[in-house]
Every structure is written in structure tokens, then in C-alpha cells.
Length: 152
Image (cartoon, rainbow, N blue to C red; front, top):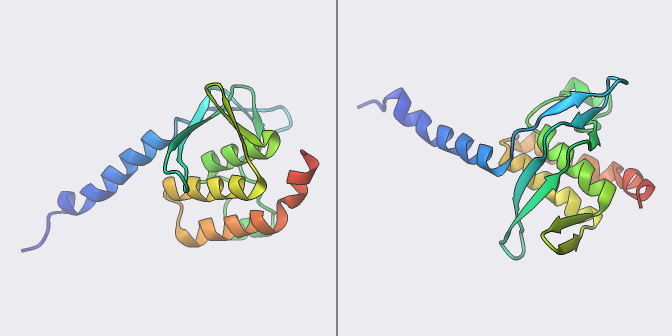
């Protein structure tokens, strides 16, 4: 007997519901220059720490400027400027700018490798395809050190 369509799609719908609980809704306004955006509502990512297994709430405040993901024009032929990776890109920009996560009264220092791993985890949590998230992760590991040093 053939499985009904709605039975076969149920796991995917459940996965999408979980993804929506991990990230808040990303609401931005376009800045005057047109290639940057400003966070319009607090953006939250509930990240699961790989070592301790704890859920850590990362909040990007209203007014934070972002370009989502800095994808070079030549790479945009295979990876679009906008996609499921926008939210993780905002988190990554935030961590690169401030190098820390504030949780209540605690401040966690974030090094570059950790910021990049959080970006990778975020893309996985948003359902970005494996090849795309790996390409973007290795892209930031190889080339984003300049942005990290600039903001130190």
C-alpha cells in the first residue's frame, strides 16, 4: 500500500516547526545606502552549545546593522545573496562585531572559531543544504579573518 502524501510530508512539517522555534522572526528595514539592513525587532537564536549541550539565547538588538552574508559577486552565481542563511548571517555579524554573548548577568567571550561554528549550526538549524552551508562555513573560515581583526 502506498503511503498517503500527508503522512510522508509530516516529518518535514515538524522539522520546519522546530526551526521556527529556534529562531525568532527576522524583521529588518533597508538602510539608505540600499545594501545594508537594520534589525527592526530583536532577533533571537536559541543555540545549543556543542560542548556543554546547554541552550544559549543569543539576542541581536534593535538597530544592529547587517548585510546578512557577505557573499562575493562571483560566488553569487551559485549562492544567492538572500536565503535561509540570512538569520545565521545576522548572528555571525553580531558575534564578529562584539565578540561576546550576554546571557543574563553572564558574559561569554566568543572567539572567531566559535562564531563560525555558531554560524554553521545556525545554517543547519535553518535547513540550509549541506553543500551550501559547508561552502559558506569554509568561506568564512578562509576569508573572514580580515573582518574579525578589523573589529578587534
